[in-house]
Length: 161
Length: 146
Image 1 (tube, rainbow over the protein chains, first blue to last red):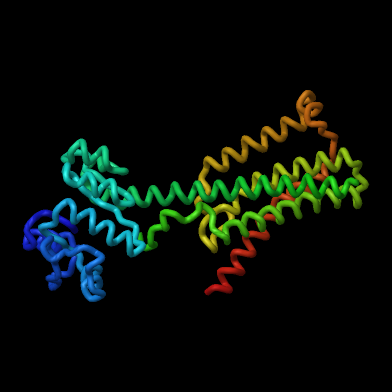
Image 2: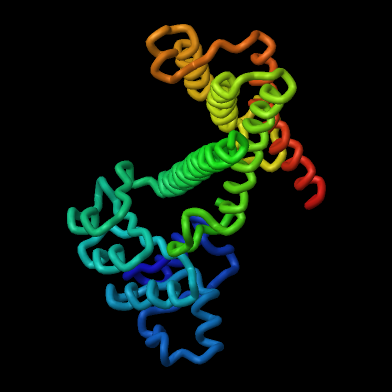
């Protein structure tokens, strides 16, 4: 969770949605975040462990996405405000809120949640994976069929001669 | 959600997928040319009759090849995610194949020669062969990996 809100608010909500455990108090604020190239290995480790970031500016959201992408992670960014637009664009998949979100966020996003429900993100990922797997299967099916035709024609010509 | 996301720049088909494509193609070729060779040299079919048989065998094996596309490593042959629409498509395609055999102008267009009833068994066998080979190979691989 990366938010511009107060750390206590962010941590309370994170606990309620079970993003962190009840006894987990690790939060980082925008002031603690430093540019990725200036981080020590220990700070880098702490950053990767932290689940809740508060008082984060839009520029820092961008830097965080950059940091996770640098770790070879696939980053999804959910946002609704105008200031989220750059980060939505930068993320591997930008997800905007369709009901309460701004038009700018919706236009910058790859995916717009029509019902503003986080559960729909899970559904969308599931559907996306099914579609991708079906495309992959279809390509395998088509290639194997076409390759068999080439082999059959070539070998049958050889057998007939 | 338990499986990690795929790397964005990874190709659509990986190395094992390409090997699988070649494996499928080779099995289909074995089934088609096997039935062609059997009809020609065991039953004394002419080259034209053999071509007709090979044509139907190729169509039929490719139609049944859809049963090799299920994703589970070990799954039932016929009770898997292949939906009723696939069954309907199969029925439609078999109907079209029957038309090519019985409708005179289609017969002429595709140079279809009459073949005997016993060739139907050979055709069915050539279609079922790749499905069985792939199914058995998946079973063996999953037992091997378990």
